[in-house]
Image (cartoon, rainbow, N blue to C red; front, top):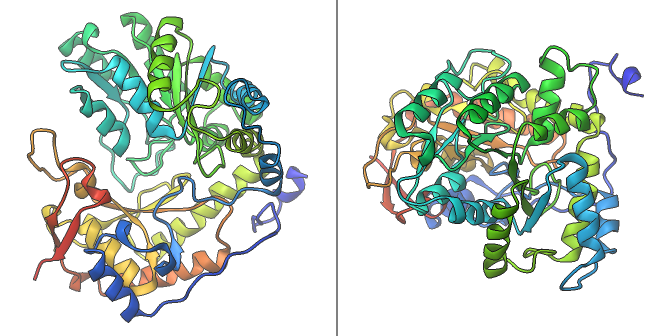
Length: 461
């Protein structure tokens, strides 16, 4: 079947629509009022006032018929539920780690792990920490260090999400291996445009960790998308199955954190997994304090069932072909229209380079926020700023421009059709035509951490 479909230029959705939900169409005037009420922060906008919601791909996808059927099998026993055993088998079928600790979502897994291994004077390297990962590291007093090598946003290198192995060696030499409790690799690299990591890079990082006696963990929430890119782009993997590639990635690591709201194809859930017995015991103790018993970890049995079924579906090649190609369809159209985007297009999102698109707005007036606001005002499209608002504030209270000011248009899985995406393209072109007239923004109020979620903004006159 796959060979037959590959002859066609059009990549069709490998599903039919079984159920629909309405979208409320709003006017520019309604959206302008919504923005002012929300303090120009799209996180504060009522979802009913959003036409196309590309804020995140986390938990926003459509579950399949078979996932909804699996929900009916959910067993809500407090301990030892049959749903737990199905979930465990599904996880270990792809990631054969000895210990699997369920959590209600990925950030809970991060919170448990870094509460156990973090602390003052500790340093956690990563190719690039995303927002909650960084916050959970820093909350313990540890330092989060990003080691993605600087790359031209327009460079079409196949694996731009990789870790700089020489920089990892230098960091270990500088701070000492005893201060590094764990090395992390985020696959795909969300902060850097949803770009993948090659198996060769994972092996090289593994070799460094082995020489210095350091554990390597994966932030693996988009593992299937990363495996697809390896299959498509890395020598020697074209004839390997996606589950086989995932197995190989897992074999290079000592553990993982996971948000099943991404490549688990579920609306909630996650897990922490590892091979170390002593570390697992400490993490389970923290789980019982904060999440629940080790066989449910803050999840209902029905959620465990949905995740187990989702893990079976996400490694199907017809699904991944559609998923990656449909994201690229949006990115390639914006690129053809002269809108600067991170190239090549990543797996789960298209990232517009707002700093390049709005050069008249200085980074500390948040060009990414300005573009996010205008995409919503113009067409009801909710994206997410990935830039100085999200990453510019440092633990000591100082603020510096982030490496990039991006707007992420994250594509929910199996949710929108091509006409929805064509509408996004049309709105983005309209905004780009008057980009030089968009204002900067300043922060009117914000919390001390993770400010992008709840800060309120004001336009700069």
